[in-house]
Image (cartoon, rainbow, N blue to C red; front, side, top):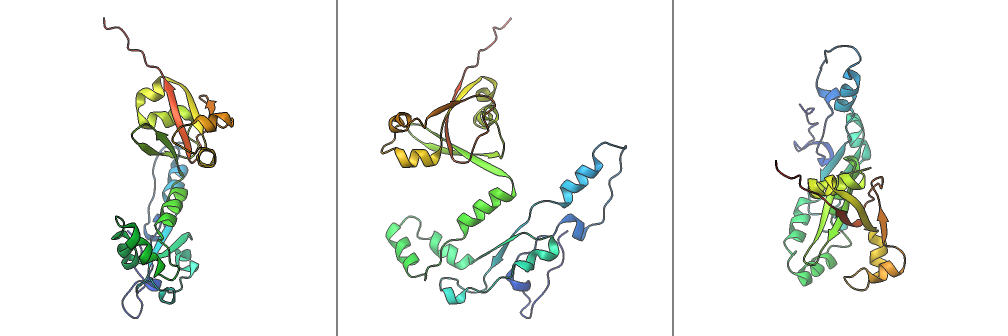
Length: 224
């Protein structure tokens, strides 16, 4: 159960922050089992998870003067962590302009330099959960795939399809920043000419933003 909210004068959670308690702060528990089977490791896993908090502004944050200060110590009593301030109302208004580039730009121009907190939420969320990502690209679509940090190329291929991992041969890789700097079209010709298109094997650790083409071969056993 989460800890009870600290109510302010107006009945809101202190600082407008959503509180996320850890197990050790709100629950007494014990783990029973044989010696040396990982009880301590399990308990540490349950009580030391990463923490990220979101602090909702009570007012429209479309004007810089409306941004209420948020103290990082607001999360300290629950073990610390990152606290990201944002305005639901402002984000909703920005989202409503997603299909109209001109209206979106006009809204941002009138927001006194305020920018969306969504990218920061995503980036910080990935960091706290130890997640990474890579891209695959074809003639008709580009896909982004989520993996755990430290994932090897065959296991990353398995996120797409188990056959990719089972029959893994190699990964043809280019870093996103290299592609962005060198490619003037959709092809990889310029990237290859610059020596930035490389082949990696089973021990390659996939990096954030890698654009990967997996080579694999799966043979079907003959039915008896």
